[in-house]
Length: 315
Image 1 (cartoon, helix red, strand yellow):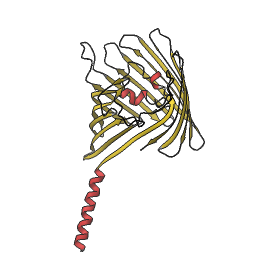
Image 2 (spheres, helix red, strand yellow):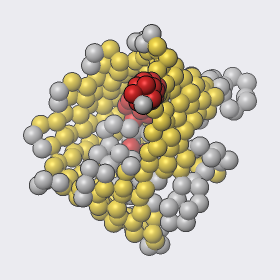
Image 3 (cartoon, helix red, strand yellow):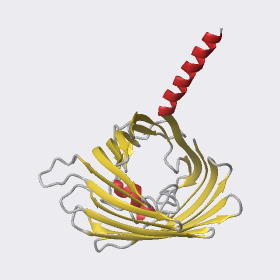
Image 4 (cartoon, helix red, strand yellow):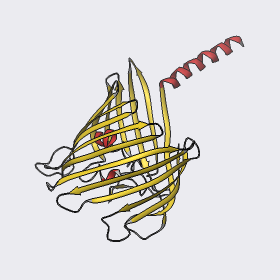
């Protein structure tokens, strides 16, 4: 009996060690609310933040090395249908969020597959108070204006962390199939220490002439965080691109946040596109919050305003 108990204890110890060396995590976001998008008179139940479900994992290979994988699916919780779009274009990409496998170590990580660009992760997505979500999101009206890429397929990406500085670089196969076009690539660096966050990125989206340079800085003091960021570059048609946003997040009470911001962009000699947003978040727990937003876009001929009221749960 004692020998059996001892054997079980030994097997349990080995099982615990094995499970400690690898892990698989199921995660996701579910968002639904009611509202109206700018440019439309339709009031509807809508997903304002890109609902998703994903799986990611890591395995300890020993010697400081680890294997990594992850894939993420996007869907519309109001209908249950998958969201297979890239921008406004339909795709056949089931793992529309990303799908990668890679290796990591003291040198950083290297991932291959469909993944976010370095410019998006470290510079374009960190200064918008709304994180690009809801009708109030500002990043696509200032920092991610065309020809910016959100994700690239058939790509390889490196990420490294050196003290307070994070760096990343990616390159992918080009998809245009046109002579003279470039392989899409981007490089980015981000500094985060204490109340200061600063980032810079350069992106070559793919065409012969398009390019984007992003710069931004944010500073947190007391209950408030202020952000200022901008972009400059050229489109595929060789038109100038300029944009910027200013934003603020202010904590109010024990579990509330007020978000406010302004974004503007101009392509070529056209009229500037201006967007003003304000919103409020009320945390119900560490994973669930209520939100409400209002936004106005100057360039639209009708239905310049949009709004939403909703709930978001993260797991």
